[in-house]
Length: 168
Image: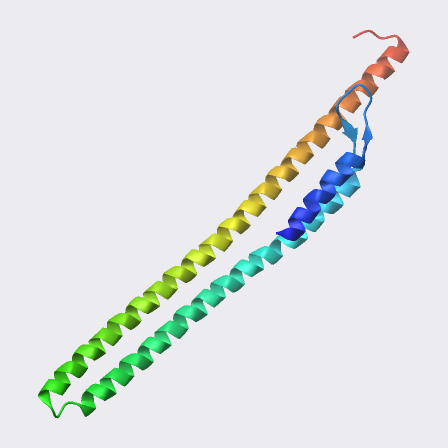
């Protein structure tokens, strides 16, 4: 995100340091410099998308770890229950504890999964907003540049016609 903001600052600096067009609120900007900055923005956006993909991979790992932990806990509970089967009251207690552990593991795994999904969604939303803002900014800049050149062409054409003595 910082790299995109840096490039937006570069565009702003370029606009501020550009020559003013007399009698208008416009500036003359070197087209190639704008395109260079746009290319750099495009090259840096995929890094943020890759970061989101890493977050999703971490999310999957957290879920897998939670499932493995749950499986281990269930297996331990089953082994414990088999050892206590001889005494009926102890067996009942162990069975209840095993079920509680299983439910707690399921809840813990579910909570971890939901938290990881929320975190991944938040990062993806931020990335989406950055891309959307960059696209809007680039679109506005392109429109402003196109308008400037169209007006310049109109002024040049009008000046040529005036030189030739042709009235509009």
